Amino acid sequence: MKVKDVLAVLGVAAATAAFVVVLLGPQRVDAVDEAQGIQPRIAQPKLTIEGCEITLKTDKPVYQPGETVTVQIEATNPTDQPVETSVWVTLSATEPASEFSRKLVMPRPLWSGECKVVLAPGETKTFTRVAEAELPAGQSISISMSDQQTAAMITELLQVQQNGTQVQAADQVAPIMQLVPQK
Image 1 (cartoon, rainbow, N blue to C red):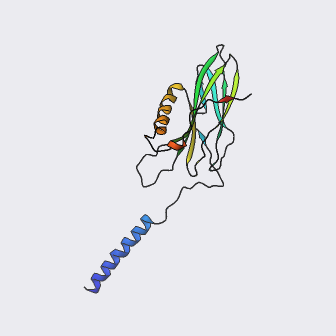
Image 2 (spheres, helix red, strand yellow):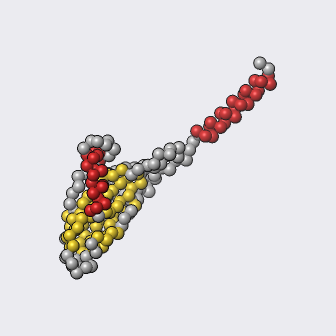
Image 3 (cartoon, rainbow, N blue to C red):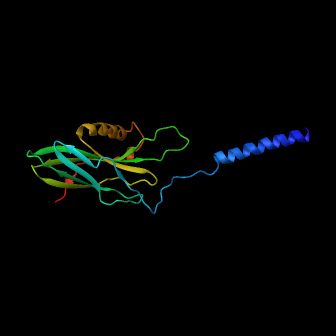
């Protein structure tokens, strides 16, 4: 092999090595700053069911990984009729999407709870509930409310997971429980 050929092979090898280092080298990481904490996003903060205005909020704006969320549901009946309905609250976690994946990242339910709302005309009640799931580090957390019709689909999903048909988050889903109003 001539010196000219050896230099050509070495040049191509060096260019290939540089390309691989740039492509597969250190990447930017979207990590969560543990000191900053987790800020849950309330996806559905207000809901109107049968004329009742229902508002959802958390007990604090920022949580640390491993903590549990306390939700407060305030229900007001501005109508002149008594109302009896249910509200479902769902806490979900979503892992960050990979830059190299085309797979859609789906949220996984961590906890779901039902709140039976019984209000006289003009009455307001506040319900408090601790979500029985620890917040995972490095994930987006969302909290949503829904009515009975929408919640029926969520209930079926949770029951399938608890029966062991699906493995994802089966051991982290708490049973559906009624919320107790504050006095």
